Length: 116
Length: 170
Figure 1 (tube, one colour):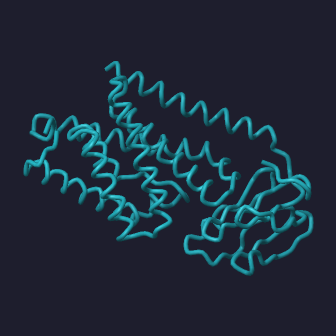
Figure 2 (tube, helix red, strand yellow; figure 1 turned 180 degrees about the vertical axis):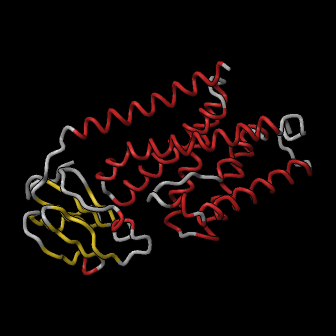
Figure 3 (spheres, rainbow over the protein chains, first blue to last red; figure 1 turned 90 degrees about the vertical axis):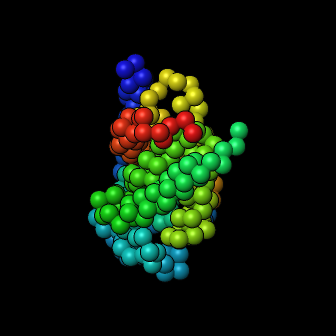
């Protein structure tokens, strides 16, 4: 079964790419100080992570909670509610995405630039 | 070469029906929807089977018809763009890989699944203008690899066991 060897090489290669990507992004693994809220690709506002609060986003379609330096989606009117299940975020580059409402919440280190 | 023999038509129809049933069943089994965005893609068993037994053109036909029907039945217009582009591109990749003769159906289905996921991601980025989604690339590659291994194993078993039953080489 020579073909199987190539299959395994392919699978190992794919997993190696993933690990490399995770390691590279992991190097930037610092705590962020702001969350950037963007709708439809346009930045709407920045919220500081060190101030606790509950925020209504995008005209009330999503409700974001900030608590002890973590941000999480508390409520959403979309049917799949994937954004709520994405959990708490606090590190730079982490995000909560709500595709039905075209809303992205990204953790950044400053309120001036979006960190990709 | 166009093949309108009743056997081919019957088998093509059966595979379309089967892939539709698979999409429906998959949506109902909670294990498969537990991780957001992760799908095993049971329907691909039928597609890989078609690719190996009926050839690339028939597999493409089945895949496109399945996407059109499942969109009409279960889904909306937006998901049609994702599903169709992903289905076509991943089938192209699978066809080329099969043609190269280097990989078995396992490898073919793994890269097919990964391509499927990545194309959906690229389309999502184009539709929503959110580059941030590219952060999900490693997750999509891993989930595609796992799904591809599962589907590849099942379909290689089926292809192996139906050999000599008259399904191949229509």
